[in-house]
Image (cartoon, rainbow, N blue to C red; front, side, top):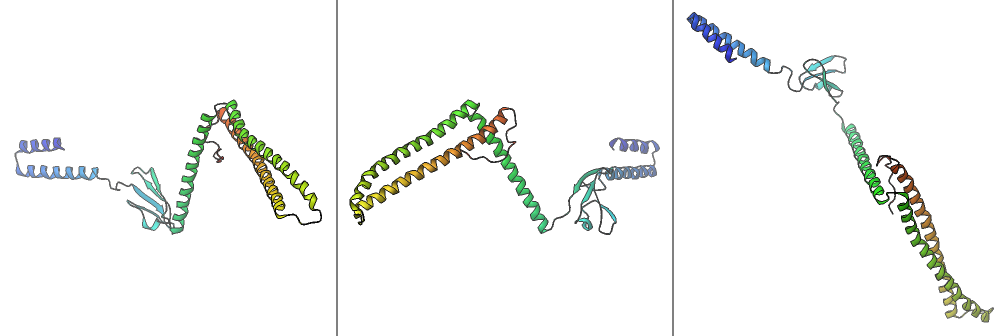
Length: 238
């Protein structure tokens, strides 16, 4: 623009006339206005919005089109290529559904991250099957010792009951003394308690074995090269 003004000014001096100077100034102003208008986008910074309304009429605008807020609008560049798509405005129910989808997506992403972290920790704890088997046996040994202790206590209680039963022979067809009856009932209750403990510990052995079996199956896939987090089903910790 400076170059154009300089040329015009030199033309004015060369012709040395007021009318020529005025004409040149007007021409410079016109050129300046044209340059300014060319630098300003006619369709706005957001692009050209285009849609077909409910009556089938195609509409265009330099801003979102009110008649098409209930439907998708295309946003075009100046050359007519598609820049982006403006989704329809949501009502309350649609917004709630979208938020629910977003919540479920966030939960799925969190579950995926947890699965990756869990698998990596699993491989750190158990780099091979021998280490995993050792951990299984350690967990089972505690339960087996508990069962052995309960069985030993149960046998002791059974031995304690023998003299009590022998004493009842003296009271055939008679009411047992309160003290003897109380001892028998206490012994029976203690035996039942030990039997319950043994049953619970046996069930726990079954549960622990199942956990270690599932864990080993997962580890074998990870050791074989499967990516951590592929299996997002939560597993119980032990």
